[in-house]
Picture 1 (cartoon, rainbow, N blue to C red):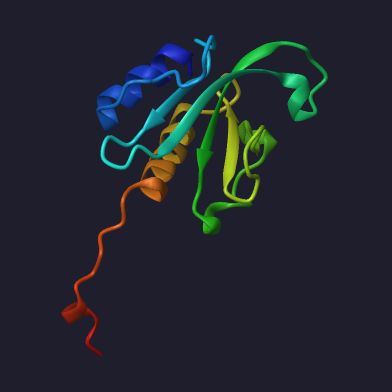
Picture 2 (picture 1 turned 135 degrees about the horizontal axis):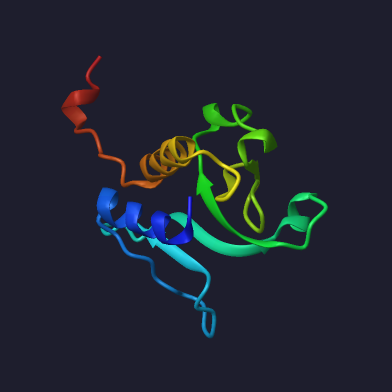
Length: 128
């Protein structure tokens, strides 16, 4: 998947465009929920070497937050690594050129769901 295709998918699927929260950095893009402003994805340009690969090629990488039960389901053969520059207990990094589009879509949706505002249950719903 290309960087532009990822941007287009986020706009088409979730109705959000990238924002650039870091001064003087117009390559690192953040995708947020419109209601709670939480990040569900951050796009960066990172060297493959940061992922233990023998290459200095700079690639587009997206960090995504996953529910704990999904960890361990994916690995480097899928283009999925422990998160670069984020909490590795909750986030993964996906190298866009290495991952299949359907897997990227699945992981982005999981991240979107994991970071959305949780609905509060009413007290009467809690009656046993």
